[in-house]
Image (cartoon, rainbow, N blue to C red; front, side, top):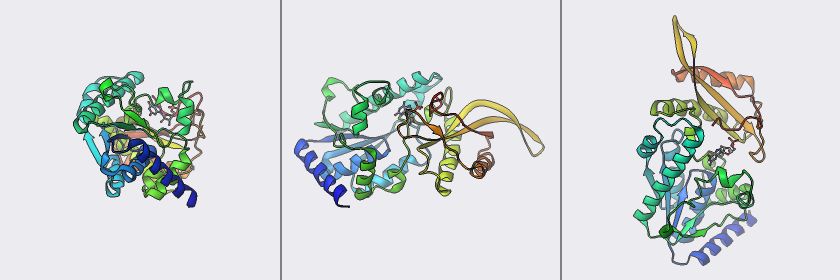
Length: 316
Ligand code: XMP
């Protein structure tokens, strides 16, 4: 593909011209934009790039390993930070959704700042900002607010780097095409968006390690199932939610009193409005069976049949 090849060469040349001998810091979220940027920058500046991936303990099953396996072999100077304990401590007992977001944003900046000092000094901060982000952050309820904890604008003055944003003129599809040419595995390249606060906003109410562990297993069954049945790429986003509802069930001769998990899948062009995905009943039946059989803490599974609006995609 000549065009995308050509764009890659141009982007690399632009980055090299901007950065020179400077050192570049990048936050890796595990999503396609920052992962692709990591690969591009590794090509452009090699060891002058330090890519920091903060494991906040709110990731999906195997996600950290998947990100490492995708980036390390392709020469990205990747540092994984285990910040699980500090995030859990800060979130202890917090049930309000906005409060959770704020705390996660604050802890993210704190951890990122610490790593920046540890591996620094850096001259540049790279961000995977896309063209639609540039437009939307001009106003409205959009990306600027939603992604506030992702752009590291809250850093103190002595860490005020110059920004490197090679994808500022690109759309998501173009980034995916660049990712393909740079060798990013499809599992990461075609991944649905995943919110910065991660599983914290899908584990309703106050989170605990136990609840996150239940949610992680439910989510993995659902997402793996969508891939197995060839339904993943047809959804814009799919997620599992652990509700605080406990209800009565029956298993063998025993009554159970266990949690309800919700599954949600949507189709959308812009994530501002969305339709619930009309997944086949047989698929939903298989998912429900697998979940209640494999995750003993769950005795009831529901599928969310609400559009956005009035519901949001996430439950918190
Ligand atoms: P909602 O739930 O508002 O979500 O319909 C729209 C899109 O934004 C994502 N989302 C977030 N992303 N930090 C993020 O980085 C957040 O706090 C956040 N909240 C929602 C959501 O996953 C969906 O893709």
